[in-house]
Length: 403
Image (cartoon, rainbow, N blue to C red; front, side):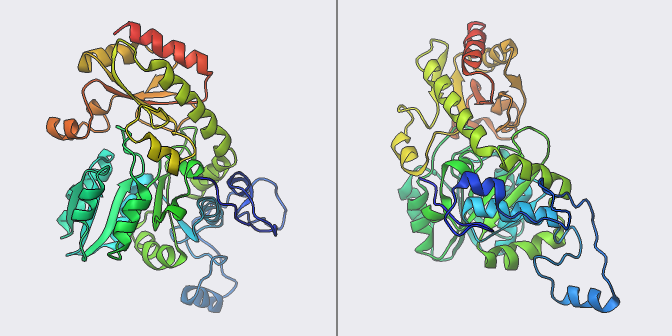
């Protein structure tokens, strides 16, 4: 899906996502700084008691009360990511999971119904299976790639539909427009976690998504420094539904982290495009390797949903999954033989990262649950970084020799 240009402050013509990621939302102080100012403060001073009273009665986007409610640096990040994503507004949160939790909890109450893809990150599953159901929300899980299953599960009383645009870690791809059409036919709100597709490769709003959430810890920071998340949507949803819940429950992003995220946005387009190109080269080099049961990458023609990927994304993303023959022992030999790729559980970093989901990010799931989601004992998730393509291919092939 190609980028839809938008305007930003100071420009009368449409601007690309790359330009918006550098300039949108900038607020300069009286000093005219080039780099965005970091307002590292939790509170704000009022010129009088009457002014304090007035601001608490009605505070706008340029009038701040308390950092849990809003902060100038955080507001710059919110405006910039909203401009890049193509939404009216955004609310920055303390982490990606705070964004998922905030979006869902602010929308739902006891007796509501949610339909979700079953292939999800472990913490997302916990929110749906443990937290929402504890408060009387009914949750139905479906095979996210099966449109007939979505159609059968979404009911007139369905309030929210939730999925990851590309599932973690098995890289299943959802037909976003088709699922949104099914949800909107029953007036359900579509909440989508778009971490793997990034804001660069997909126009989620054009595909019909109502609320887009990100863990900004991943590609938006891109250098493994800070936790963060963001909820993008209409101004009405962000300010009247999500914000009241988040500001009273304490899920706000810190000014320092917002400043780091602003700096990450300036070059996210350059980074993720380079990472996606390298990911495709790695996946192509690994296809058919004797030590592997399978290579999964949305940009490969062999991916089960490759045609769909090419319709709704510009590139296949930055993550490759490999299923190593020999299960956990072989996977561990592979991981321990890597020299450049590091072992960790993050993704979207400048450094390439290998993760064994069955024993880390998805270890709390039962063996049957993991098998149902395609998470075998031999599955390794490779988040491709910014190292030299040839160096990474040589490192991975060398480690496979240890298998």
